[in-house]
Amino acid sequence: SLHSALNELLTKEEQIICTLYKNLFIEVPGKKDFKNSLLNLKKDQTISRSIVVNFLNDNGYKRTDFTEQKGEFALRGSVVDIFPINSTFPLRLYFSASQITSLAFFDIDTQNTKETLEEITLLPAEQKDNFSSLMNWTKNFDYYLWNPEPDLLEKIKSGEFLIIALAIVICCF
Image (cartoon, rainbow, N blue to C red; front, side):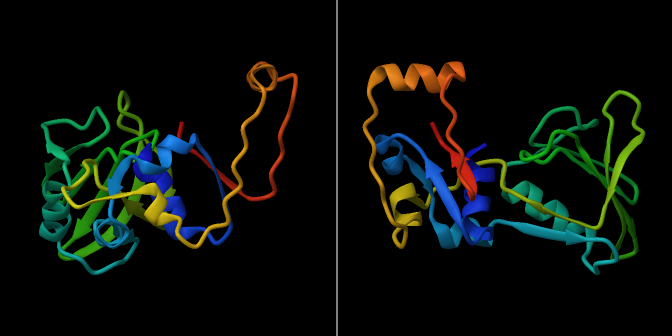
């Protein structure tokens, strides 16, 4: 997702962005606003359940009875189920008073734990009103503009031609 790509831009030191030139001007959240709309959660962290719920409500997550789709969350006693937009599986948080005792991805159908986690960063499910552009996010980047021949693009798409980059690659086509 776009928010996952923006999070990568915030957290990784070396990056290569592969995008069409026009995409450098698409509306994205401002860098400062986006950074402030992340929520880092860790096992044994002291944080009230209401702070997590307020974050979810303020950042476009929808409360449901059962968490089945990205951008949804459900509350049951000391358990908060969240389907982060940047995850393949929903997340289950267990609270004891104001402490996270467990974080785990779970299977929607069986409700069984798939993987326990030590920490996770929740991204906003919706974009807020303060817009910027991808160009503003990359002010300090070196730019290399490339206008390949159409037949080379077809070879790349078909797998006949392979491009390898020794860095994080974020594609925003």
